[in-house]
Image (cartoon, rainbow, N blue to C red; front, side, top):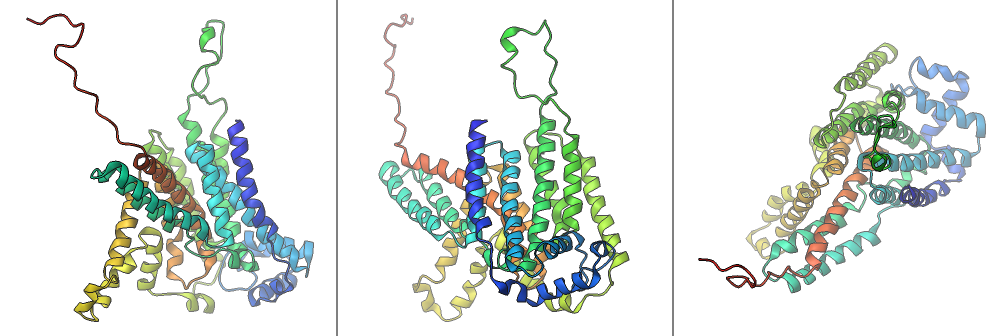
Length: 451
């Protein structure tokens, strides 16, 4: 328990700078979207209106929960921009701490949970280039030590070298978060959704984790004294309330932002992770999650216009662009590989330069890192596959950084999982090679004579 308290304190200290960095600029309320939202709220004077139809700027989105955060700020702060900025930062702060809870339920490892939370918190401040550079040069140092210690036994150090290089790349955020999440008031639509999405994921993970534990047997006079305090972890209460919390979190996320339609799919990924660990997920519960999606779509059909708004039509992108956007999560080195033919079209002399080979080396680094990261199965599935699923619907829209907020929260799990594997591989590279025991004399000293 003490380790968990210290780990949570680390996560809290990492999240506090995000909360304290809230914007106080009067310019926060000068953005056209913010002006439109506040004007719609002040004209309607009815917070429940947003449950009955379009949200305040009427661009065909059903976001009553996000609209309520604007209603609350309008009531509390009116035209005080700092209050709106504080709410944005508070939502991000809450998301960071909820990520800690999710990692705790997925891994039950305090320092790993804290590390993933710290990575996500640091991404709010921008690229964590210093840490990335340290890991990059650590990879080259590991290679040098590995060559010195293991010589031709390259399997003892090359995997560590390539995985550390991949980790140095993954430590850089896919997108900068500060501008859209802290300094842009409407960015709270994504952070509000992320709060409830992480709540749903963590509650569901806790539900399945508790179901893995046996129910406690009562201690009776017949219970052997030696086993009263030495039994394996047991469940003393019902897991059902956590299932209810997961369903409620999913419903609130759907009422916050459209990206939450991918939440049931990510919940399935968590269920698969527990199944791999030997659990028996409650698949019937997933019927409720998907039923919420069906109800949400029916509600949208009933309450919103059936055509795309001008804003939506303007933001749509091509399938080709969507593919490359999605590859940023699945295999970011692929774009470089597709650029090789363009490089070679300049002439055969390009083969004498590093340009055609750099994408190949980059792809080898990424592939090796991902291959070894799979050893942390739960973090790999939730962090790599889960983040790609979470971002999928937004890949068809023109870039806005807040589209990446929830996916990057999940991505932090993948990064810390790769970090754990990289440290294990580096330990092998840095340790001296095992020495073979000297051959035993035959017969061994003291043994009985053989005929």
